[in-house]
Length: 425
Image (cartoon, rainbow, N blue to C red; front, top):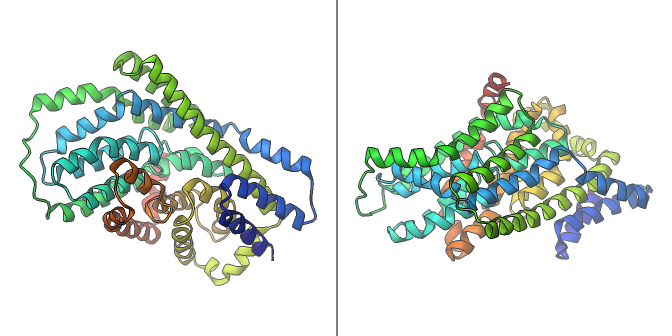
């Protein structure tokens, strides 16, 4: 009965058009009332505790790092490097988009920030070269969701906080799946590029390639510093976020000198607004998470799953289908905050490695960013490219199927995640 109260309350508030943060807060209040445990002071304490978290300090700094990279010319140089090395191939701008997606993902950890940068710079070029608008926009959107998987990842930070999973290990475990996603996009785009008839693009000379590589070398050092620091135990994920923000600020202002004081104020304003919404969402979700634990909701759901809990792979398939359905109507952060505390204990009881489950949870939730009707990343691409949702859905469908195949592969062969993690540990 508690499951019914929780779901009916949450869905009811969302149906009324209430913002997710307020819906979570009120759902926690309803559960508190239903359990005859009403205490306003406890409600306020959990709300405050939800934002008062040292690991969550990584969120505003990763958001700031992403904004600084876009405003300071780092993202543009990454794309210029990819263009110099892959732009001459048939469908070359598509390979540029994929390479830039992987490189940007290793720096910002934000799907929206990476997608906005890619769409702003590449969609006009692809349109000018005669690429199909649907396939081009679909590829850019699909590339954008690699960011939550390759470290540093803001969703991994949030998932680690709400489930108690090691954020450092989530970061390290996401490297191989993120690269597999990039390779999957290469395969999908290669099949599509055969039908693209475009003017032959001259191959960049060795001098040009060396120049863009030198120009972008400072940008390429950021993922090396972050992953190397985490692997060597030099800093925590929260400290890595600070390092990323400070490094991006230094490169943008002192080396590239593209970020002015006026631009910095605008960057700080945008980052502050995004941080406020995300942190309030985390605070509100803490109230619901506390009541979910108190009501023993995971135990109820585990009992409902029944035989599935006896087979880890079958359980993962069921969770995958549930997550895909949820991803169509919820953004990634609310999905993590709502379902993470519920499903993680169930998976652990079934014998699933908690870090592996966290990677799969965020990966499947990220796919929801490119599925309608919510599809946050799709909406970003559509807004920048002024494209209709029908065009976007048609273009992203082949890459959605590629991602589903990758999810199936990682469920069938968990060692693709766990073995590299064991080495990186």
